[in-house]
Image (cartoon, rainbow, N blue to C red; front, side):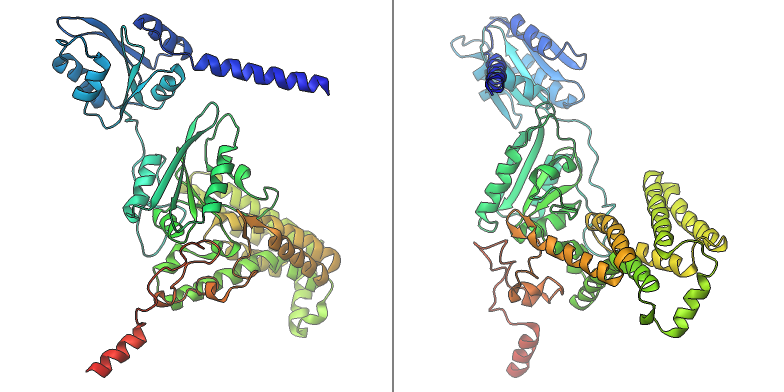
Length: 526
């Protein structure tokens, strides 16, 4: 026990010494500062140091340091041009740093820095540091200008109607895309850096007065508690911020569409933006949200409701159809009509494997084809998966390894899984399908039903930032049913989800006449 205590104190002492070392202030000697900066950055060739003489009468040595590839060359050239042509050194009583900051530079973000750690962070994120001999502060000018991909159409969440814009890998572009949709002054953005080495910029966006304060505090707390070397994408954060990382069900929603993110903000949710990834996270989420497509809010409500119910039904089919087939053909043949039973028996006459092994072979084959189609180049990936499924299915039936009914069952299962608008919920079904398959092969329909009951019980215990995962079903709230299983007409959706937006549940004025009432009123006036 004493050894662990001593080791803990030793580590803390080392961390304190490292922090004190990083917080060393700058020196008044220019060359000392430049040498220290270059030494801390490993004399990297992409760290550019440009020395020059400032002033005409009272000449003083100066230098700028920036990272090549992270800055805008136009901003650097403008920066130097201003210093060479417009700097006036007649009044020696005024600090050169103050003169340059307040009178010369027209760059948007300019600030002073005294600590070496802060200067290093700014240089490595695209800013330019100006050092002047005799000054113990450096001037930091924002000159960010690295190459980024432009705003492109979404690839994974394609809609029939609606905007054709997707998030990019630049966090500032992503926040601008959201602010262009929601122009309210109540839209809040908080930024922090996560990762001891990567120092990835993380942004939290929410609407003040709509989002629940406790949920915002919990999101902020969980992100700040992450202690890791680097965050390279949104998937790195998911395990740290989810309530139950051991569950197969996703508790964080990904989206690449700014309009979807804006819709979540208007409902009282919080958006997490990670610099360097084109996907943003939305929290908290519920299970039924993964069946709500963006198209539901651009199409008419009758079609949207039909398609949403169809997605839920096909997801249940993709989860249970193989196990249902195995259970009935193995244990409960009396449930089938005689004609169908005779047909299935004739098909399986030459198959050497039981139904469970037959289903397992076909399911694994389709999973391999699906993974191969994803990993191969896009031009041939779809062709390989489609042709491979047709060829292998036909060859397996002709060889007598599987029956035609099993090929149809597994094909329907695979097609049904493609109707889900979010890939995260499909991934959980792919794994649970094998568990239900083994239960049905062992205990028949009773095993499959107990497996489904276990899944439902597990889902009722899940929470997403304190919100029940089955919100809308358990607990049941009649006012929230306007956008759960159905998508009600706009004029009925007067309130936001109750648990997400408790401070401001009203979405629109409920006194506005509904279209039928409005038409009747106009008819009476006439």
